[in-house]
Length: 310
Image 1 (cartoon, rainbow, N blue to C red):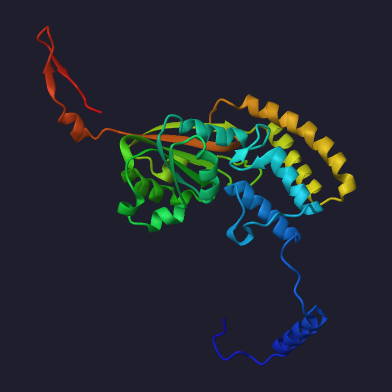
Image 2 (image 1 turned 90 degrees about the horizontal axis):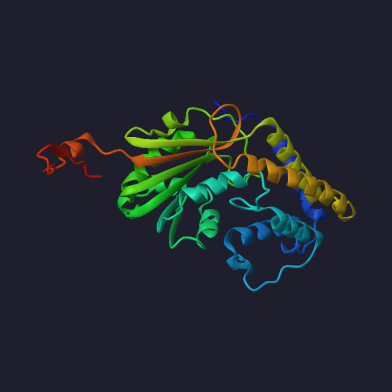
């Protein structure tokens, strides 16, 4: 930004000359995007997220180049959040989220990657609606729909500031006995999530709700093992094919240790120290006016009993 006229400079002319020089060295026929390393990884992730090919690649059978093979192996042995293997660093976090939705017929999912969570839950849920957080905040409440048995809201620890607005927008869409589960964890696509939990109840505005709180703890052993496992996987992704067996052996040993660490935190603990996720389950609190209007019935002994209707 300039307060006055842009000062005279030779930089734009030098930049244009550099671009012309680069353009002259390029082939006149562009390289196809298919089988490019970035394309191979993107296509593998798309298939893991949606279960199929993108419309642009429909009917195309991907080749078996080294990059594509590495991605397929990675997704086969680890999965991709939230659909991960039991030894994946984030398996306990998403297992808690799935358990919170057990028994619900009509479910609303609010997450930064709604397609990933919809693909993950639809095989076990009758009716799943998945929306991004931005869509929920920008959309009229009447368009959001109503009558949901449960809602899973996935918030990264860096986006807690929007939690209160999301809770207020989602509440009218739930049935009177519906529950709202908030999973606070790292970004959905991240391989690991470790953070110190802040005051999440205050951040998301839980006033007027009964709250059940639990966190999946991440002690120093679990963090060290799972961070090393992630680094080993990334190193294998960029290594020469001849090095893959050595990376695979190291990763397999770390995966066994990671699985044992995940078993140790299967039950949610307190909020001391580091954790990989925090789970809040919100239940509606009956307004005082409803309790005051509850009918009074006479019991057989003549005593009065106040019956609260939930």
